[in-house]
Image 1 (cartoon, rainbow, N blue to C red):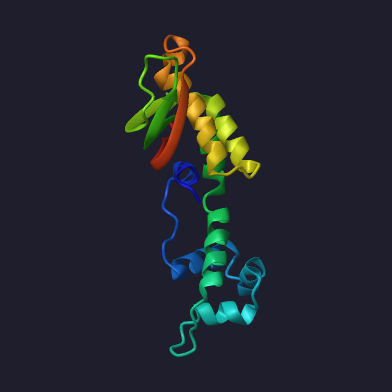
Image 2 (image 1 turned 90 degrees about the horizontal axis):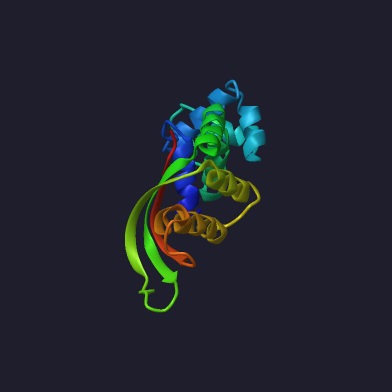
Length: 185
């Protein structure tokens, strides 16, 4: 998962996701009414395996392996705050968001301008159309590169060309993203 994807995920949550595997298993059990059978079905393991992971008996407890830890994490992320995520996404698509980034920006511009890429800190309000395009690309399985292109086009128009008031024909190269954060509402 790239920086942009991580930033979108952080923006859609209001509380942190449980950090430890134990806390994640407790969340999955709580969200499935305490049923180890349903959790086992979700994680594609046996019910007995889930029971070994969550037992309180000393010596009987087992830890999940790396593949199971990954499956637990994905299951928790898929179920974490679904209504809040939906509301925050709808709000971003309607009202826009503030994009904070530190990345390398370069330019393809007419002769006489500096096109050397350099690292910049940028904080910019972006409209809901950009949020809709980003979420649609993410839902379609777009990678970090396609999301970077969407944000480069939006930042080029909003930040560098001041919504079309200057620097006509300036094309932005956006790369080496150190971090990408989104503020919604």
